[in-house]
Image (cartoon, rainbow, N blue to C red; front, side, top):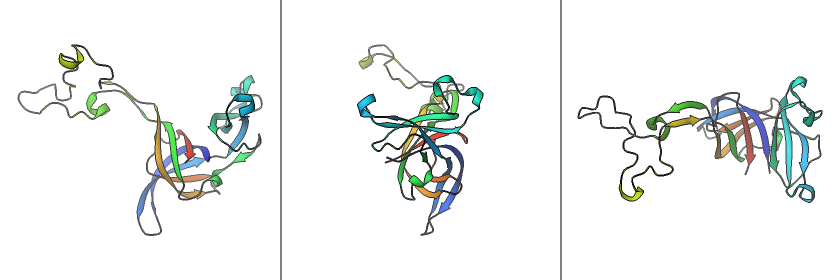
Length: 198
């Protein structure tokens, strides 16, 4: 399985060989360093722990030992490299289908129109201050005069881990450790992103 950590950059446009334009996101990815291996004999499953990004030595705790990395992530993998091995963007090639996970932008407390796409009330018949109201949330009938579980209401929006699947790697730049991935990925520029190959 292919995997990589990186930071989200800006968006751009890329033309393919046929002249079709694609929206793309630039990701500064890797290099990663293998810091720990999990084997089925000892841990019950197989995975690779990698470190990414430099951290201040004063912020490295005793449990990390001599591992001055800012981020640690674990990826399931059948093939286990050696501890200390380096993984760079060359593991990907143009055309690879990937899934990208990151923390989305936080939008604070939002109403139902922005959070769930409600249409709001009609703009006529004396409506003055209820245009973006959610409408009735309880009542009789099947629910039994109560608010049913999972009712879409106003609340905190964004700031959650989001995974976008079926994105495509458009370009791989090993000289600058960057990947060009089709479409938009979660988060703001500078957000840590996890890239997994299918």
